[in-house]
Structure formats: C-alpha cells, structure tokens
Length: 182
Image (cartoon, rainbow, N blue to C red; front, top):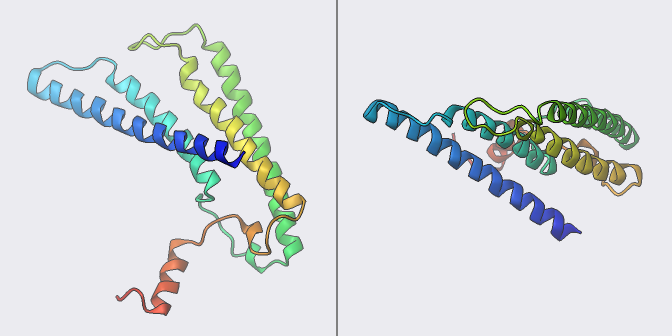
C-alpha cells in the first residue's frame, strides 16, 4: 500500500512540473509571438490559468503529505501529550469538514458547468473544477490516515504537532551548532 501511495505522490509531483513547464511555454511563447510577430496563442491565458489552479491544488496535496504547510505550534508544543492529541484530533476533524466542503462545492460546480465550454479552448469548465475534486478526496484520505494514527496511539510524543520545524528555528539551531557563519 505504501508503494501505491508513493507512486501516486510521484505522479502528482510530475504533474506539478508538467503544469509549470506548460505554463512557461504558453506564457513565454505568447509574449514572444506578440512582440516579435504581432500574433499570439489565443488559448494561452486560459490554459495557463487552469494549469496554475491545478498546480496549486496538487502542490497543496504534496505539502499536506509532507507536513510542509505553515503552522503555529508555540501553544501546542507546551501542552502535555494528551492535550496535543486532543488538539490534533479536533484540527483533523475540522480539516475533514473543510475537505468535504471543497469536494461538495467542486462537485456541484463541475455538474453545473459540465456542458459549459471555456471561451478560448472550448474545453468543458468541469475540468477546471475537477481540481477541487481531486484535492478534496486525496486530502481527506491523508487526513483520515493521520487521524487514525492519532486516535490509535501510533504517533510518538513529538508527532502530534504534525508540522516541520520553521526555518527560523532551523537556522537558529544551525547557528548554535556552528554550521552556518554569519
């Protein structure tokens, strides 16, 4: 199962890179065509916007799995282990609710816009809203797994914080160890 999850997130990272490359090619190509040849790619702005939305949603998924989102843990770190777990469970239940709202809203918009075509590309607008569907379902799976770990005591005492050290703390630790010189 871990192999499938790892492959899924490698695919997501590849899709993020492809979105970025396609955005660069579309936007840069459009600029060159406009200034050098007085023409352009008519779907460039629309597709770039769609690719940007997909890239952001997929990047948020990768960051959620890697616990790379920003977080404020100054209060949580001072709580006892039981308090940390309670806060983690409450936070995850709230995040599951938000995932449900994103999924439900994206589903409704995809259904409403299934037969609506985008002005420049002619593609169904449901493709645009499908990014929320992918995000809502995948994020809910990640959060449910972490909630399972928290509820059944499979996290260590430090893990209920579920965010990485902030860069300021890491820099301070490196300065104290002498590995970075000002």
